[in-house]
Structure formats: structure tokens, C-alpha cells
Length: 180
Length: 122
Image 1 (cartoon, rainbow over the protein chains, first blue to last red):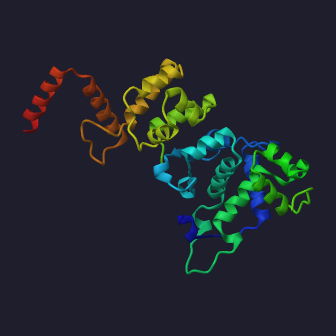
Image 2 (image 1 turned 90 degrees about the vertical axis):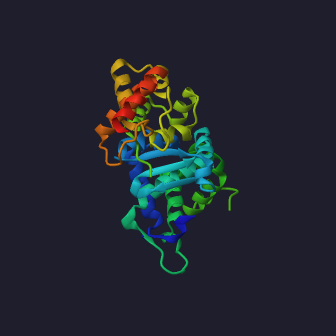
Image 3 (image 1 turned 45 degrees about the vertical axis):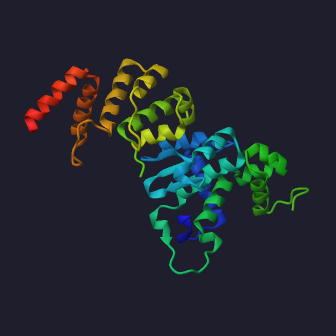
């Protein structure tokens, strides 16, 4: 994917989490456990961001990409099958929707540079890592995540996959029972 | 690049006011979400009948319906009459309105029109 040639300004997990909190605040989602991702993309962001466009693309256009964001154009596009599953509540696709919001918020031009040379990216300057980190924080804010107490509860409460819940648990250094 | 056309902007406004997703609107109109997206961004021309289907399905009042029709005219990409690339929005609107009238003409009228054009432009 073309994203691989970009390097983002370095961002810590904490900085990205704070940005996700700000986005929740702006969208009036501060106290919401289960983020209504399709409504955020289609009903809230257009009001919050002048010039923002959400669209759904055919498989032929996006091919192997689940979503595509042009931060400077303020455009998010999801592949049709991903879009439909996201509306159906599939955790993976809900995460994809939030991942794209992460690119939109974090990766406008001054914050994204073309990579020069072949040095491997550090995670904290990799736009894909940053967008994933943002998605996890947006769907599972730390203060609510601690309440969940188990992966099973977190999956239900936040509408995420088991993988995403386990990853968040490790990130927050929580030792929930039965999970490594 | 995706910018919403005037029609796309207005359609989205109605959708947001009604709290509907692209999918909801697409389902009710019997179209696909990517199709509606493509129409909103002007990648696809607004198909004949769609504007009236929307007006009926969403029971738009007279004023909203008129605004949607006007926006659709302004957004039409495929004209029967070629419009220069430098045409302004209002020029495009005029040409589109004319093209629409052109569509509703009878076969005889079309023949007459063709003859008229031939006379004028050789």
C-alpha cells in the first residue's frame, strides 16, 4: 500500500490517546461506551469538519484495501463489503472505520513526510501503527476499559474483536485473568 | 478526488437531517451504497428518475424538492450539449436545464431541432 512510503511525525501512545479523547469530546461521545462508528463517519464528522466527505467504494476500486483516507482532501472511503459489515457491528470493520478516522485526524500534510531511503520505520512514526493505536483508543478509552475487567466483557462493551481487546489490555498493562 | 456536487451536498444534508446512513438511503432507493456515493461525488451522472424517486421516497416538501431538482440540474455532468470546460456553474446549469428539456422533446421536435442546428452551424 502507498502508505508504506510515508513517515509520520513521532507520536506516543499517550499523545494518540489524548487525541482520541479530544475527538470523542468534539463529537459529543465522552460518556459513550459503544461508539456508533457508522454514525460517526456519516452523521457526526460532516458537521464537525468542514469539507469532509465520506464515501463507499466498489471492490474494483479499492481492491485489497479495506479503506482509504486522503487527509488533505478530508475524505474517507470504505470498501463496500467492509462498510456493510461495519454497519452490521463486526469488530474488525468497526476498527477499520476508526483507523481511517485516525489517518484523517493525525496525518494531514505537515505531519506526514515521504520516506527517504530504506531505514525501517519505528512504530511510533509509522502512520499505520499510529492509526491503529488511535482506533484502539477511540473505541476503548482507558477509563472505560479498566471497568470491563475481562476480555469477554470488553468485546461486548466496545464492539471489538478479541484480538483488539487483548492488545488493548496488554497496552494498558492490565493483568486480566486467563489472558497472557 | 471526491468533492460532493451541489446535488451530493443537498442529498447528504437530507440524509443527515433524517439520521440516515448511505446504506439506509441506498436500500430504500433500491440502489447500492457505492452507487449513491459515486453520484454524490459526481463520478457517476445522476440517472434519469433518481431525483423524483428521492423526492417521493423521502416525501420532500415543495421547497426542498425544488431545491433538489435545481441542485441536480447544476450537477449534471452528461449533457446532450457540450459545455466548455471553462463554463461557470451557472452556465452549466443553463445548459443542463436545456439538455433536460431536450430529453423530453418528441421525435418530431428533435428532428426540427437538428435541422435548426444544421442551418445555424452548417
